[in-house]
Amino acid sequence: MNARPHVPLLAKVLGWLLLHLLILALAFVGFVGWQLGLGLDSLLSGSAGDRLRAFGDEAREKILYHPPTEWNALIEPLAKTKNVRSAMFDQMRPDSIPFRVPKNVLERARTSVPPQPGPPVRRGPPPIGADGPPEGDDLPFPDDFDERPPPPGRRPLGGVVGNRRDDPLPPSRPAFLVRGEGGDGYWAGIQVVLPGPPGQPRHPRVLLVRADSLDGSGMFFDFKPWLWGGLAVLALSLTFWTPFVWGITRYIRRLTGAADRIAAGQFNVSLPSRGNDELGNLGHAIETMASRLDHLISGQKRFLGDAAHELCAPLARLRTGLGILEMKLAESEQPNLLQIESDAGELATLVEEILAFSRAGNRAPRLQMVSLEPLIREISAREGGEKAPEIQISPELTAVADSSLLGRAIGNLIRNSRIHAGPQANIAVHAANGPDFVEITVTDDGPGVPPDELSRLFEPFYRPDRSRSRDTGGTGLGLAIVRTAIEACGGEATAALPSNGGFSVTLHLRKCLPEGF
Image (cartoon, rainbow, N blue to C red; front, side, top):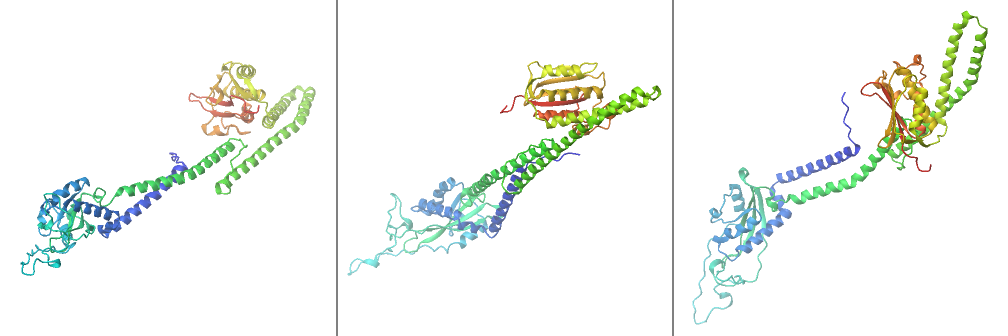
């Protein structure tokens, strides 16, 4: 069965945040699409209308003192700077536009301005009679001629030399924004008011602007502010949420580490305060649970120690009585007595192991820097049996430990390997500096244990179902004493199955004394 991939909580929360922002973005796009479904003209009420108005005013300045036949040529350079195409629509000469205009755009352009008047009727000067030259309102030209002098070499609009009243032209006004039929680009119409011929009112014309896309190179719809706004919202959301989520995940990691230490039998757990929220209450509950477990386990060890101690005296009297009885029994009854003595010896061994287990966990360790090579050689010579273990340890290697507890742990491991792997089994003891700890490994080439039982081997009174049972002399306390002794030294014990077979236990001890020693 494949394990589910691990996804950190931070990634999940940030994923939900991004999904939330994506939904908001889709809602915004849907709203814009709905608004555009009502007509592109709705965009003209915003900044797009201001940009088109400015473009129309700028185009009018370019053509103001030039004849209509030159208008489109003068507008073209300005349109190129905006990456669009533009031309002035002339109702009298619609074919004067230098590019194709869709029919729906022509129709909108025609309906956006009133009909263009015909050529003006030029009034001639009245005859000069006896009353003298005309005055005031009888002047031959209307008084609204442009007062601005035309550029040198140019005639004013209408081809008549004269001046108009100083009346500024109204600003240009966006008239429509449509998509050309058949997908022929996007078109905007701008009403541009130009001075009329003499005797005629000012007449608005339509300046057409074409772009290939809706943004119109930023004139019709500028996506950049929306893009930067979206990125700003995303950055603000991440800035606001990331510290909050990071604080939650960091505290959860601490809770996970505390639970792992409790599962490994280390009940001295302390967690930082987090207030009265759910995580803070969970941390307090874990600390309380660890304290109660420590109290229960310590009480259990004390009970075992007290019970074993109380068993020592009657057991000693029992074995003394068996010795006296042995001298009085007949030779034919001796085998039965030997069986009783064997059971009493096994009981004595069990009591001794229980006492050792209780002492290892209850007495305060005397931590110091211990030279490993001479200590392990001495224990190997005593517990190794007929075939001495192989030892590979640097003479200079030291570790933080209580020498008696460490000696008891290593002795138990060598004796355990010799009993269960056999008298001729190869046993090796290696020690070296690891990344964070000094590692001592005891390995044998025996039958090993089932892999699913590795995690329970250090439990008190636990024996695997296969070779390691009481029939071979095991009490189920040997590895429990190893773990208790090493943990009292501030280290850790782990079991493993080497790839080439056998069984190994590694002891992890600190390299230097903690502060305060």
